[in-house]
Image 1 (cartoon, helix red, strand yellow):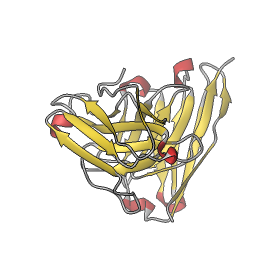
Image 2: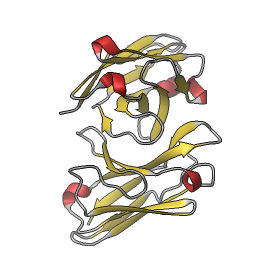
Image 3: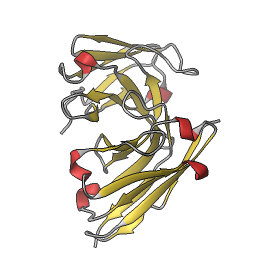
Length: 110
Length: 117
């Protein structure tokens, strides 16, 4: 089982905001950068956020990330139907010597 | 444009072996750490293995150590994963990913490995 905990699901109406949390420990989030990934059924997974809050080129600023202590957060503002997907946080775990992913969160647009 | 194209998945019997491949284009393959990440049916993501630019350093998740081997051929812009002693829990989609331990910035579409008799 994953060492990073996310809520199984979040939902909101179009145009609204959702927040996805990712809770870890000092061996992972507390001392390493966090990334966020989007998984859609028909396309390759996509990197949304790296180094806690940086967006790769081409990623809309509707996605934003932050980190505080041993937790990280992904915010999606101006929610669109195309944002319906599974979202995973990820980071290196220094104790496990392995890259670890969160449990995943399904975003539903109502 | 960065592209990662996996191949080689399929149906394998428990205890069997298979090698999956990934051909990279659109970036300097020999300058990048590369990884394999998998997703079991209905489950989350799991990092499987990574290798450095030269292929001299290799790291694995505990559950595959001694059974899987990651390798690369920089002359062919290719990444491989040799999987042996396969178990039911190894089934899933295997993604070829650019990156090692910091972030994974490009992903392939994945290749499906099914382990069943």
